[in-house]
Length: 223
Image (cartoon, rainbow, N blue to C red; front, side, top):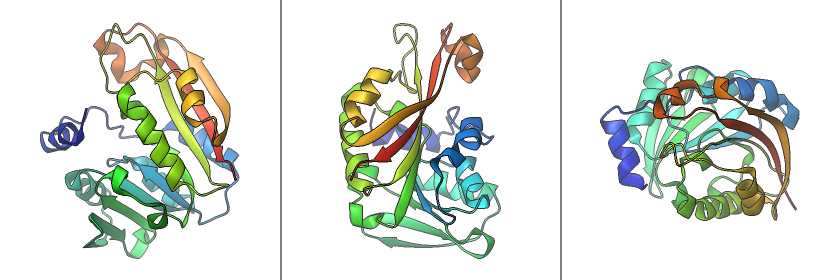
């Protein structure tokens, strides 16, 4: 799984992974982070997720990072949001204006970000980033997330776990043991929700799975 795969998926409109509705776990658990109003939320691998719109409408600033320019343009167009754009430091930067002020998305490589680029972000939201990574890439992803998040930053992370003999990702199965091993040294981790059963399959029901585990994590970056 590499950048070319995701670019091609957006170009060919193979975006079955996109959820049109706001994620119910975000709505249920975001307030548990107890963030100050207008905190800037970093959203890696954001696609055109309506979760960013929900965060903004609920009083937060948003900085999304997405590889595909097409996905970013679709996000603003489909939500009828005005924006300006410019290129800087390898990123095509879209900045919301008017009612969308404070809702910014940069098109570019997540792994090319530096901590100084997002040092104004006090929180992060990972709905489908870690589970988009092949096992061989997870360590690199979490090392980068750790380096980008400042001490004390809080985050919400959603994962799924399933029998990978029955389905090839993405999304990939990420067991709790992986989350603990990859992030435990640098984050306080608590499981806010864990559910298992066929009712959790959603649009993955047609891909050979019989059941699925979902976990919602509350994270806080250690000093």
